[in-house]
Length: 497
Image (cartoon, rainbow, N blue to C red; front, side):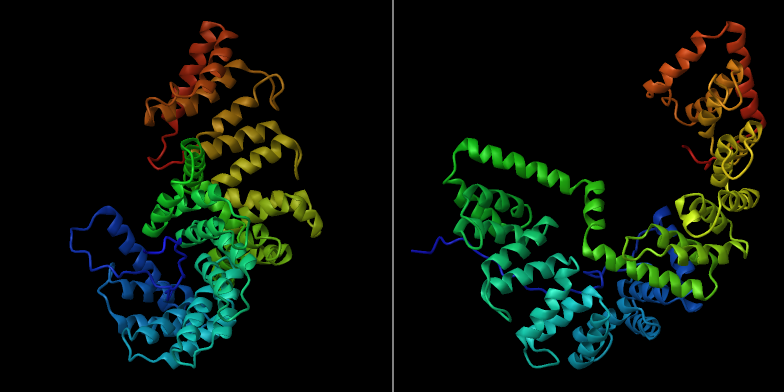
């Protein structure tokens, strides 16, 4: 009689950083998306030829895929080598995997191991997992399960869900580490929380057998239900456990599982989970290093973005002083984006901590607005409205709101309308208030006929304004709003706020 013991899957994988399976060249007529992607590739190629390491790596991956350009592994290797020589670890991993698999080069496990070791030692999680696989299988080295476990653990601690599952399996089997069911349960749980089906199944098995955790068939049923979405063995286990539960118990657990799966599909929840993971820190660290490399070569866009990212990075990567230094450097060389970001950064508590005043923030915001930044115009309007860094001048607030609107930020009409209430900075003027309130409504309704009908809040506000006005005033405001729009035509791609 065959054993009915629940299956426990051992997670085994040789994880590659390159996407796969590789897609064939696109043979159909170019559509808009493909044309856009190809134009992006051409821009990337220009940056790669200019020496940008990360762009060189991305160009190499395109030659591997063969989607936007004919597949050419020799070209891919050449680009990966250029990027790796500049310290781009993802390119080093890509080269290592090509030597491991004999793609475009003669298969050479020792070269693969050397490349992966360098990247792994520098914290690249994909390199760590693939290096662990080499040690585990004895490729390019003698089999060494202790070393394999050590590299799997490094990747697992960075939030790599497959590595977490492998670590759990090794604790369960005592492979390369002393067996420990509780540690196995811990790592399966971490991996399961990231939606890894194998770990769902393994948690279900541990709950079913009471290994590393108190036996609980309801929890086992729950995790098998999660795993069965993509894993046949989990479905088999799910059916076996079902026989031991009542209909009410099954229904309750299945409802909980459905809610969990729905949450997994929610992009906002997935993003929140990712930003709290160790992997996010490492990804952000890599992003900052790539921006620093570009900024040091004089790329103004990179300087501005680096300043912004350093200011809003996780605590362990945040560097406000460096952020301001890069923003100042770019703004002083004419970067509008940097001037705008600098005004924003100095306008917060950060400015005071570093010896800057609200006036400094205002001056950079003014510079950005004069150079064409629409968002800076809005910030200037608020500065003049509140008297932040400048004397309070309501008419200047009106001016900069209208400039922002003329540049496409039509939604500022709602903010401008508030200036003409009793409590507003300018003072009560019912006709002006209604006029500016109507401008964005008319513009947005022209683009989307159901705009007002679908916005109950705006309907109520509009009704309250009109109820307090005479018919002649309403007609005057409506005519003024239409005339302002006629005098200030907007481009089709103007922002809708």
